[in-house]
Image (cartoon, rainbow, N blue to C red; front, side, top):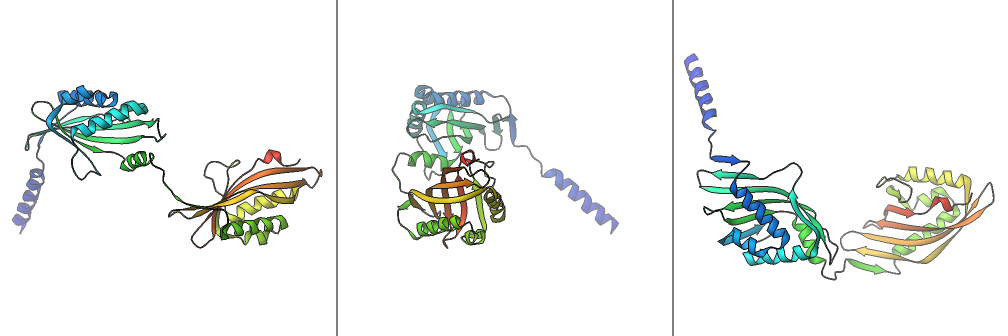
Length: 305
């Protein structure tokens, strides 16, 4: 029994070493890497002749969204457009990353892998093309680039293409039940009855004071009305007047937002001074017609002292 256990241990030990086999070499410096670097520079510059000189006759390129491989002329057209229309166009090594050359012994394949960041914005549409870009270049025996596999942000590319079109993203309404709800709520504010005002919200409604809060630092319902009560100890809300008219932006698949402008007259309870301020409010509604978020803009320096 003891001999059997020893035999099994030796077998397992030997097997663990048998799992490790080399299949080529990894290079930090290689002529193929210089070819790839030259190709990237030519791509950014729109230097089509240099690009042509660095690729094989059967060159093909791929992205994650392409069902069929792309031909060289397609890549040349992309380079031509980007070089002429992308402001501050660059492809640079990403952070501390650097390219690797992998020489596979078994399949006799040479690949260069690059880890870069592409940046710039389209001067025609303003769309930014900032994105990480991982590319696998396969090199043939003559030192020419045989293929490219590009992995980058396809959603960003789609946004760049779509920016050339005029696209609807929902409907704008001047009159709508949600406008009615906001108007009635603003009448409730004029009563200064806190419980009545709070009934327009849910316990999970988020509040954002855009001018006076850190970015994306929201307040809860209780926090919002604790601050409201502090204001009302000093100020009296004399009058609220609708400025212009509210709009409902009913976005495709993203709920509805009511945007509105109001003129609010306040009186300082101690000094008796009055002033009228402008307030812009955005109310976001869920599918049940409940207010899930309120963003408001006002300048507290305009309040009466």
